Length: 324
Image (cartoon, rainbow, N blue to C red; front, side):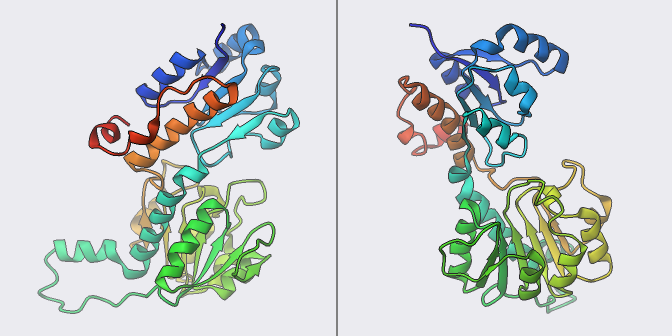
């Protein structure tokens, strides 16, 4: 029996590629655009699935894959995918937002604490030997009771909301539509900012959310407000954010994502009110392994082929985690 043909457009751990190769006839998409075009002309009609990470999926690529049934993405975000074009062709899309939500939410809370309590600068203060000279470090802000606006109440935003409730924060949210949740809803992000002491951004990057947080929103947030971004860099107008910090129009920002990452503006690097991390929201051994497993398992389930093994034991020992 012939195995389904799947296009490999993802850089995954070696063990995941091994499982994919065992289950399917895998075809590696060339990185060079000209080579990829020639490759798809020769092989595209046979491809029924895609293992995806960062490769751009647009209408032109889909036209070269007339038999495509499923895209299994390693990421939560689909900003590299023309979702409308995919849906118009009846192609199924699976991603990993349900898997990485907890670790990304944990990272968001960590960033919120870091920026409001000034942990990064406090660490540098102790390491520089300044504590004996200055007995009392500058006071921070408490997120307990703080008014926090969540921009995008999807899987990740909901996970953040659960954690903030435990801290005693007062919550509200913005999104394209109201959800059945016990939380005030704002249909205008500037109004949410005006109502909030902190904005936590968790929305997908789409044409509608590009530069959603702009100068007007930052003005509405005010000089005592904070921004935490664990969504995508271009959700924030980075130039406007830098200007707002320089003019003391907001109190601080904690950013895990940037407009042109891995390049980070020097103005943000130099500003000690900004906490900066290198897009590590889902960056734990456990979650990254489960994300790769999901790429394999969703393809296996779709095509009805036996899965490589029971993954349930993978997280019970360090060997499995280190293999990720």
